[in-house]
Image 1 (cartoon, rainbow, N blue to C red):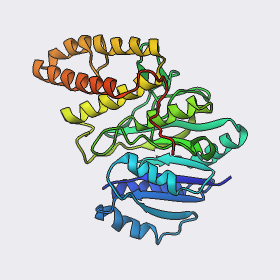
Image 2: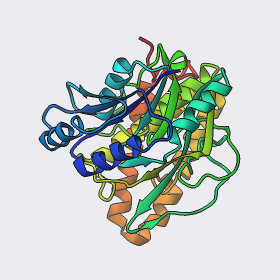
Image 3: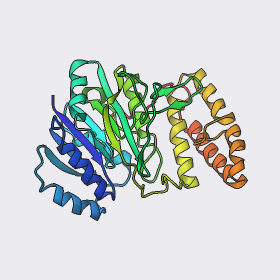
Image 4: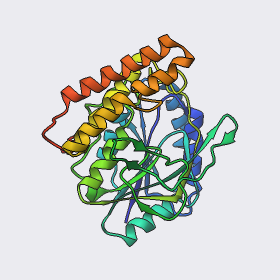
Length: 319
C-alpha cells in the first residue's frame, strides 16, 4: 500500500524544517509528502525552496491552499494526496522514526481500520508534559469530551476521536468525506479534527488510538485570533460554535439535551457554564463574565444552525 503525508503550514519555517527532517528519518519512507502552504507566506516559500533541493527519499510536493484556513488546507491535501493511506500531522510536530512503519502495519493487519492516531508528546516551556491516562478520545454521556491524546498509555484501543497533530486515514474510509467548511475561525477552525475523525467511526470503520504511534509536538504560535495564550472573545465564540455544532449533530436526541444542560449549568474551564463561571470569578468578575457570554453566544448559534432531527454530523461533508 502507498502512503501520503499531509502537512498544513503557515509562517512556521523553522518548525516545518524540523517536521520534514523527522519524516526523512523514518524507518519506512512515505511515498509522498504534501506541504499545504498559503500563497502569501513568503517565509515558508523560502524554506520550501531549500527543502525541495534536499535529498528526499520521497516525493515532496507543495500544494497552494488558494485561501486561508486550516480546513481549506486539509481539504486541498486530501484532494491532492495519491496514497492508499493519508497521514496528517502538524508543521510543529516531529514524528518518531517508526511513525510511518507503525501506521502502515496497523492498516495492513486490519481491513476494517479506517483511522489511527497516537500520542503527541507535548514539549512546553522547556519540558515534556508527561502523565498517564487510559481514558482517551471519549465523549461521556454528559457530552463532556475527554481528549488526553497527549497523555495516553496502555494498549491500542478503539476511540471516538483523534487529534489533528497525529491522525491517519484509509482512503477508502474517507473517499466521500471532507473537513467541514461550516466550522468557524480565522485560521485554525478548532475541533475540525474531532468532527472528521468522529464521522469515520459513525460510517462503520474502526478508529484506533495507539500510544506507540507517536510524534513530538512543539505547540507553536498561531497567527490569528485563536492564539494559544490569548484567545479573543470572537475566537472563543467561534470555538464554542464549532464544539456545540459537532455535539448537537453527533449525539442522539436525548443525549444531546443532556449535553446542552450540562454545558449550560456546569461546563468546563474552556467552555464554562454557570458553575465554572462562578469559580472563575475569583480571577476577575469581568473576564469571567465576558468568557461566559462569548461561549453561550457560540453555543446558541450552533444550536440554531444544527439540524436537531439528525443525530449524525454532516460536518465531514460528502462530495
